[in-house]
Every structure is written in structure tokens, then in C-alpha cells.
Image (cartoon, rainbow, N blue to C red; front, side):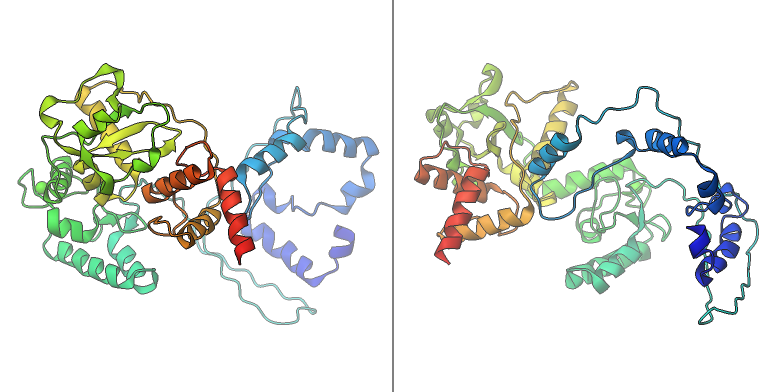
Length: 410
Ligand SMILES: [Ca+2]
């Protein structure tokens, strides 16, 4: 330990720089490598005590990185480690030792006859950051410029960058107040600069469309965006429904929409014995099964598709609609359908599974590793073909079988 490495030049240098880096804190005198004296004077019992005190399951973590099945790994970790006993009276960990703040820049010159080359280290003091919230975490202009320069969609973000400049030019925000998420979404309801251009509203009439600070402006802008893109205020977003036993879950998706009255003929009903509004029976609706037959079921209206223009995810649209329902009724609303446990897969194995389905002639939408409605209903069709229980959701039984067959065909 110290006795060996203490003779090495980098260790000699470190022993001079560390105390200065840690600015007199105890860290400086308790370098991780320890002292030779500790080794020479310790008793075997001291070593055992150290082991008992500090090698404790609750102080340790197992981190697994790679293309693995999370459920399987979790099981394995539990099997190997779950019965390690936690200590009854654990030794208390020392408190965090603060490093005294610096008041002025500091410099240190270290020379050593054995240093092979000259070196200049600049160390920057990390200032404590004010806590960052999601709204306004990043400088919007910088974000758009960064994305336009080195993101995956430079053309899109060049457009966004210019739209952001116009917002500043028109005085709706200042450079300092125009904040965005890392991906460029701005203000309370995550507007991109072109959304601002197209849909921004000055609802509190102070001359500025301020989606960062004015809740009236933010909500009116969002309302305007939904309305302009087809939201119909006379309709709900979706009805939660129950499906008859053995219902064909491959009937889901907006392109298979039909009048609510037709769905009723197939045995679909609203939950809790509610009726569909009579004047809406002729309206088109489509089936949304976000977790296949392993979760709640919805008959969605065109408004659902408008919500998805905001963020192209069924679960997102359900979440937004659900919160809207709770705001409207001013009470918690629970779905009747239960989210049953589903298997999880690494995204790229779903992607390979989708590709295998495409090779068989299925339409899965984008081969993106996400189980959207087209993938879910293709799963239903394939389950039917194989005589498997119908779920319309990825299961290892189906994914493994399809991938294995795809491999043997190659
Ligand atoms: Ca305003």
C-alpha cells in the first residue's frame, strides 16, 4: 500500500495536491489508500470488525448493464442475495464531510525530479446550483441551436431555432425567461417554438403570449392548439368499456373505427353500467387496448387522435384524458379494467420481433421496438393463427417462437 506506492512519483505529487484540492477538509488527510501505520498496528479482530461493520447488504448494490431480460435478472439477484441478513444494530455511517468553500482562486506548484513531463491542471470550483425544475431547465435558444447543429433532426430544429428567435424579437419572452426542456419543449404545456407561432394566445391581454409564466396564456394556447387540430368540445376523449369474453382484440386501432352502435352489437358496453349518450351512438369510435387484453379497454373518439398529435402515445393520451375527467368531476376516477402484470422486453428484441412479423406480411407500423396498436393487433392475429390464448400484447411464448422461426428460415 502506502509503503509501495508512496515511492511512486504520481503518489508523491498527489500527496501534495490533495490537501489543497480538499481545502483543509478531513478528506485530505484520509486518502483512500490508507496508511502503512494502520496496517502495521491493526489486529486480526480489527479487520474482522471492519468487515462486519461495513460489508452490509443495505450498503451495496448490484448493477447489471447490457441486453438482458430485466425480470430474469431481478429473479436471479433475489435468488442469490435476498437472504443476506441485514444487521440488527448497524454501525452508523460517518456524516458527510463538507469541503470548506473557497473565497479566492488558488494555485499550487509541485516539482519532482522524477516527473516525466510538465503538466498543468486547471480545476474549476463547482458552484452549488439552484434547484432546477422541469419548466425552464434549459436555455431554449441554446437547446434549439444544439439540436439543429448536432441532433438527429437538424432541419426540424433549424426551423425551431428560427421560430424561437422570432419569439424573442416579438418580445413575448426575454432570453433569460425563455426556457425549455432538453428537447426544446417550452412552458407549462411543452410547446415547441413553431407550436407557439401557430397556436400561442395572449389570454390575459397583457400584450405577451407568455406560456412560461401566465397560466391563462398557457392553457388558452394549449386549448387553441387542440381546437385548431380538430378537438371537438362536444365529445369526450374515450369511454372506458368492457369487452365480452374471447373478444377479438385485433379489432383495435383508429383505422378500424366504426359507429358506437356497431361496437355495441359486438357486445361492448360502458363500465359501471353506464349508457353511451344516445345522440352519440352514430359517432365513429375505435378500440384502444393499451395493454392488449391485459389492461383496461377504451372506445376512443377522434379527440383521442388529437391528443396523440401532442405526443404520439396511447398511454399518454389516456393519461391526459383521464386527468381531464378527474378535473371535470372533481373527484378521483379509477379505471375498472385492471392493469395486469405484463412481461417486459428489451426494445431491440421487440424490434427484431416486429421485423419478423413484417417479413410475414404484417403491418406493425414503424419497426421501432414499441408495441403500438398495429403491433398489438398483429400479435393478436398471430396468436389466433398459432392457436395461442389471445392477448394482443408481447409475451415471451410468442416473441421467442416467432424469432426462433425467423432464425431457422434465414
Ligand atoms: Ca399574456
